[in-house]
Image (cartoon, rainbow, N blue to C red):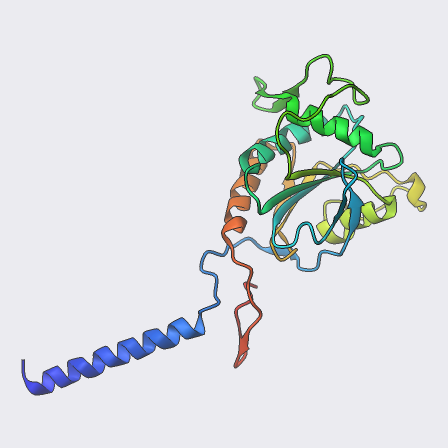
Length: 253
């Protein structure tokens, strides 16, 4: 190799190293593990509710976490048992994950007290998750846990991730309609006390409190499997820092 060719090779190598260093600087905050899930709402409102343990649950508890949202009521015998059997599948998949949470909101706060929510939690966690012949899931309870008001005992599974929450009815319904987008936003009555919000859909929220992905049908096995996959993707995402340089932003949007 001639001296001239060696010099060219050195120059090319130096240029490649310089380009690589510039690339690393430019994209040092970029999250290459980010999910391609669409952002449906980038402004989930602040909230304040109470869970089954009487603990206040606000936006601070979900800060930096991925969480799933649903609406139900404890005495529901229609879609809620099927929805929450599927939510139990989600819980089982991520119950050891510190950066994950479920918020199950009652749509009947006037009747679903903290003790009733605690009893419901025990039934959801103590019951045996089984699959029906048609492929759907159910939770089988024993005779002492089948009554929503009654002695359900304490959850046999340690639960730090699944919160059953109640609170002001107007605030609960506003979150479903304006933040999570799992209700059509068309109240069945002008008075909040007469309204009844009942939906089978789940919402997925990322670590930056943005609603992501699709409106997941809590009665559809395939969509629940998709939800579990999407949760795994969001858990891998980093929390993007807002840094601008000549119009460049590391925001994953």
